Length: 479
Ligand code: ADP
Ligand code: ZN
Ligand code: MG
Image (cartoon, rainbow, N blue to C red; front, side):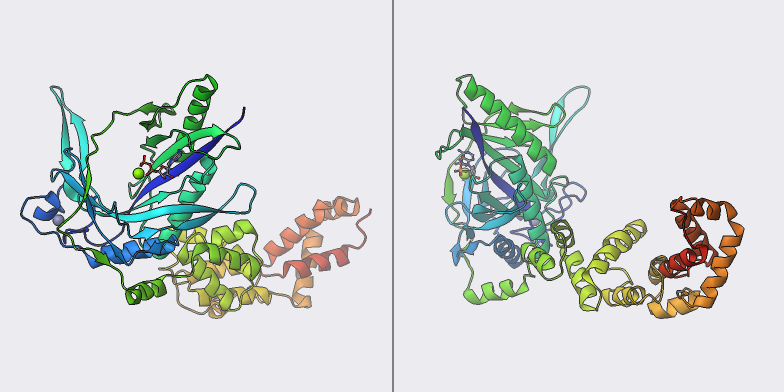
């Protein structure tokens, strides 16, 4: 019998708000331990929690980016549990009445098409403190860092629509791109701004029921999520094939050994409505205002790049992978460049230069309009591609027009016949061996001579014209 995997994800995303969810402490968990704390986020009795507007805005924007239906009214519950990371004894999160329901994201399927994966809900939640386990020669102990306590989170719970590691990894990548577009979260598993629990079960292929699932935690990168799921599918399939049963429990991914191991169960208490934080209302006007703030989302952009601009699926995916990049590309094309040239110059030339200099598209002096002006010079063959690269490098350090830089640096392409002929004649005279090879039918010799000629012209000769001129002067190639 063949088995198929069924996977659903529970994803915690840290919103990039300036302050925590219920107090004015900085939302910056990486700061020195316990530097962003107050009586509210320490959970001291008698304090009054105040729900912040920024957290709501970013939570709603996140839900919209995931195509959720925003609930006009949602509310916080108390999840009761006892652990040192939560001295208050309960965590605030939306259990009974979540903010968003019925979302979905479209991912690229393995056959290259699109596949829609459903979200079940997205709710708001406060983070808890971080425990740091240490030891010295005498004992082991744990330290508590409250910087993270009360940090604003959104938890996204998907339907069990995924069928393998690829689906899950692609969903997470797509989610990350969407929330970065929305400007609400960084979504880095490595840095802890996104945490993923994967629920996995296997069932006979063709059946539709759900088998007992296992939850896997502790993955620190999207690749780890894929590896953990693959391992867990193999483990469960082997169990079932041996006639054994899968039992409901939680496992931890061990990235060093590439296995999952069982985890001790945690006490899970009741979830009761919280009486202190008022219900959260989202009016239609507020919702419209937020909707208007969202940019065109990556999937829409990507399709547009393929259909309107003729990019390949890979190029379209790349150019839409970040909002800044997509908007830059669109602006260069709007400035008159061909999409093809824009892709080549942005990815092949501009981005590597910016990376070397530690700059970004947002901070560089090479605005889309200036890059478009440069590309126009290249397309009109006023300068060679090589000279264009030279000009681009200068543009990073000056606000001069590309055309002015061309004049200042003497980089204009030389295509007047007389000048080119002088160069061609000299090169032919100075390279008799290559000329002989060429006449003997050795084709690469021509490339060598063109190279020499380009060099002799200081890179300014029009390479196409130089090539045909050399061919013309050399006559028959001997074959
Ligand atoms: P629980 O009550 O154990 O938290 P839920 O029904 O709330 O389970 O689902 C939690 C997550 O597990 C969701 O993402 C859901 O899609 C996924 N899930 C539920 N049942 C299964 C299953 N049998 N196999 C795989 N994933 C599942
Ligand atoms: Zn605080
Ligand atoms: Mg659940």
